[in-house]
Image 1: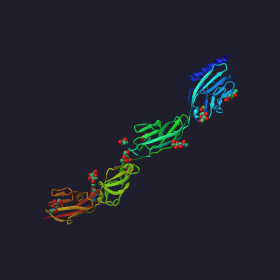
Image 2 (image 1 turned 180 degrees about the vertical axis):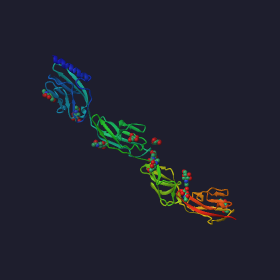
Image 3 (image 1 turned 30 degrees about the vertical axis):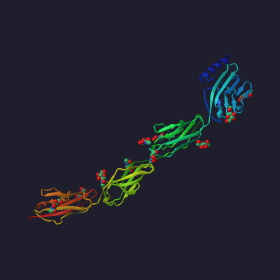
Image 4 (image 1 turned 135 degrees about the vertical axis):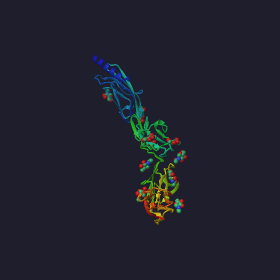
Length: 397
Ligand SMILES: *[C@@H]1O[C@H](CO)[C@@H](O)[C@H](O)[C@H]1NC(C)=O
Ligand SMILES: *[C@@H]1O[C@H](CO)[C@@H](O)[C@H](O)[C@H]1NC(C)=O
Ligand SMILES: *[C@@H]1O[C@H](CO)[C@@H](O)[C@H](O)[C@H]1NC(C)=O
Ligand SMILES: *[C@@H]1O[C@H](CO)[C@@H](O)[C@H](O)[C@H]1NC(C)=O
Ligand SMILES: *[C@@H]1O[C@H](CO)[C@@H](O)[C@H](O)[C@H]1NC(C)=O
Ligand SMILES: *[C@@H]1O[C@H](CO)[C@@H](O)[C@H](O)[C@H]1NC(C)=O
Ligand SMILES: *[C@@H]1O[C@H](CO)[C@@H](O)[C@H](O)[C@H]1NC(C)=O
Ligand SMILES: *[C@@H]1O[C@H](CO)[C@@H](O)[C@H](O)[C@H]1NC(C)=O
Ligand SMILES: *[C@@H]1O[C@H](CO)[C@@H](O)[C@H](O)[C@H]1NC(C)=O
Ligand SMILES: *[C@@H]1O[C@H](CO)[C@@H](O)[C@H](O)[C@H]1NC(C)=O
């Protein structure tokens, strides 16, 4: 008698933990087609045999034990009843095994106990397939729809972009219970790879990767010159290079002072360059898929002739006091500056002297004997210079 009371208290504690579901835990239980499920009771094994154990599925008998076993025809060979706890194992599950399972137990000397729970038998996820409405897209001009299909029951869909979950936004729509992903107005960061992950409580499946090919650009065009410098000597070789971010690769066209050159390609090689080729060069990148183009900033190319053969005219050095003389300094090449010196020092203009024509002409309007001396004229440009000397001897009248 005492033993029975203790048992009763222990069962009360256990059924309290299982929130009134009786002798079966709260469901539902999930299991895959073909799998085996165990309905485990909360009863602990005891020496006292069960007087009766009745398992039913809906209103159908699964197994009834009361001295002998009566097994429902559907369950022949698919079940095992555990006589110590009343637990039931059900094997080789089919979809139509989903539903409510009830248990009723009478133990010698104890009160009758019941319980019930729900079983969901699910088709496992298989054959997860993702397809794209198009994989050839143009940035800012295309939308794409990715669809996911799968076999299985109670499916949940999730889209992955690389390794992170795709989240819905203005541009990104997830519809049809998650199985359709629509990207409106794609950008070139939307290439993926995308894949679809399908799950139900008993299994998970993942589709193959879908990588979108998204044409974009050109953008970030950049024109550079090899050995960039302010001036180039005539006869130099220079290479202009143009780059742009573009997919597919951009085609490049070249312009000099806005006029189209016949050269194409990312490099423009100017060999043995002449002064006539000076000017502002620019390149244009064109994407034949997006039909967009971008033009670079101009790059100035200034070509100079090197200076040689500087000379001063007249060449006769003997002159007479009081007369008028023009000394002219010139050279072959691109003369930028001319600088006069007298007897090795910078020339200081006396009252009878004048400089004209950007120092080309040094003019004496009334020669003095003190104007005698060695004059030099240094012609220069940023790449070269050359000096001419002239000795003037002024004799008295
Ligand atoms: C009833 O079946 C269970 C197993 O399914 C077995 O352990 C038990 O001995 C059977 N009882 C009778 C009386 O056949
Ligand atoms: C469940 O379906 C299978 C065939 O898929 C059938 O053989 C079986 O009789 C069905 N069971 C019940 C309980 O309806
Ligand atoms: C997988 O799914 C595709 C598309 O839904 C279907 O055509 C194909 O027959 C399926 N294959 C299998 C093995 O279920
Ligand atoms: C696509 O997006 C770009 C930039 O986000 C925007 O300028 C353009 O108007 C959009 N095009 C359409 C058709 O919505
Ligand atoms: C995919 O991921 C990239 C970054 O990894 C992000 O820039 C892009 O917007 C994402 N696209 C979608 C449709 O989630
Ligand atoms: C242009 O290209 C040069 C050389 O490749 C690089 O140093 C520079 O940062 C680029 N400029 C821009 C705006 O991309
Ligand atoms: C080149 O561009 C500069 C500044 O953009 C301009 O001052 C100059 O006149 C241009 N040269 C030619 C030959 O057009
Ligand atoms: C951009 O979309 C418009 C409208 O759909 C289409 O007419 C045009 O050809 C597209 N442009 C490119 C470059 O695909
Ligand atoms: C000397 O040069 C100046 C400036 O070029 C010119 O105006 C002047 O006529 C020249 N005088 C003679 C005599 O050539
Ligand atoms: C001529 O002028 C250039 C540029 O100012 C200078 O570098 C060079 O040393 C000068 N030559 C002489 C001989 O003074």
